[in-house]
Amino acid sequence: MDFQNLITFLKKLQKNNNKEWMDANRKWYKEVRDDYIAWLDRVNAKLMAMDEEYYDTPGKKGINRINNNLMFHPNKPIYKDHFGAGFDKRPNTGDFYVEIGIERAMFAGGLWRPDPKRLRSIRDAIDYDGEELKKILNKKSFKTLFGGLYEDEKLTNAPKGFPNDHPHIDLLRHKTFAVATDFSSKVVLDGGFEERLIEAYQEMLPFRRYLNKAVTV
Image (cartoon, rainbow, N blue to C red; front, side, top):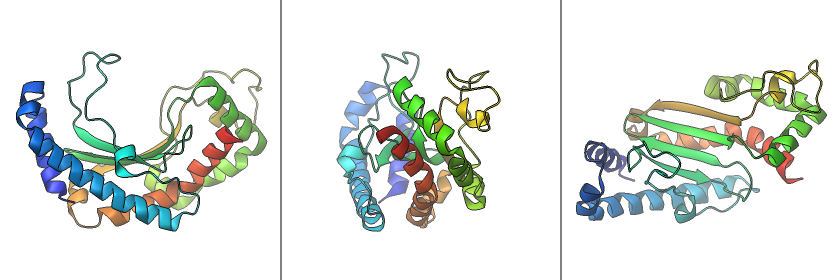
């Protein structure tokens, strides 16, 4: 994968974030996108070989659109400043997300603001065995890589049906159950990016499995 070509393309695109420029450089975009999809396919095969529960996610199914959703975010530019994709994208569960941008890259996973039904399922799982989730979150290597749960909106009080003095009230108040780590895009170019991705996938796996079990049982 020619990551330098991908980042160079993104830099040019952000300086010329309009349909006219994209149309004039459509061949370059397709070249970068096809290269990225081929890389996603290769990583997908590696992850599938190491994780027996992995959900096969070929590059064309995993890759995100480069267009921003202007219907919900009309003030955003037409095109994103990164290429993003999901691995292990089993329907209705949280996948493992990879993003490569101009200055920053990111690994993330879990469930971002799940719908009320899935959110209730996660809270029920925490009510039942929240100690297991805390054990995952407090593992030294996990905390070193991801820090903790992604900081997003939280309830001020306990969610409906749970007491304010619940032993896991700190977790129950969350609306998003996801983790992420970001780093300089220079790391993408240093030759060890794929190994770093696989290490992050493995470190995150118990966290994602906990959530996915909660929303699918």
